[in-house]
Amino acid sequence: MFKDDSLSIFIRLCLSVVGTSIIALGIVFFRLSSLGIDPATAADIGISNTFNWYLGNYQLIFNAILFLIICIFDRSQFGIGTLINMSLPGYIVGYLTPILSRIIFHTFSKSSILEIIILFVFGMVLFSLGISLYTSVNLGVSPYDAVALSFEKRVGLVID
Image (cartoon, rainbow, N blue to C red; front, top):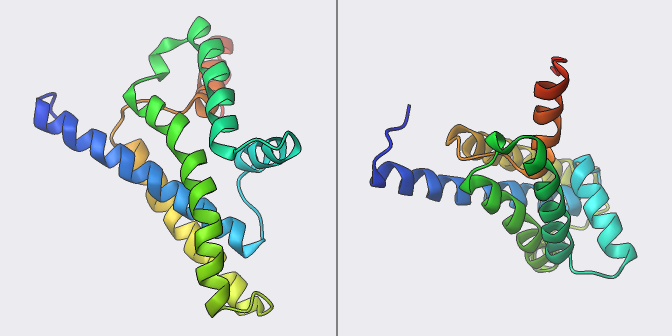
């Protein structure tokens, strides 16, 4: 699908950053809807709140530890996209959540179930679009995703 020339790599790198940023924006809308988020982000937010750490800092440290552990078993999952995905989302979510919260709840009331559903569906669309962009450029997976892929490869079990 992609050639290995400099322009192609640059475009793939940009798409990885854009995809990861869109994923983070989708997570912000999930949070604003109060209807739930993906389990990994929920754990990251809960733990960072418990220890009163900034979400981006916690997520980067956790992903770095996971990255080092997975590197011992299977480095083939990682690429430059891994570094993008392990560092950007937490900072984007931490930065945009309070800003968009003020903007959106100045307009919406958060008491209307329709408005909450709109926020959630918009978050789902953004999250899905971001995932498709991020994964289609094939520049590596996040450390969290590499756990299941490495486990599958090592143990021989197929995870669907």
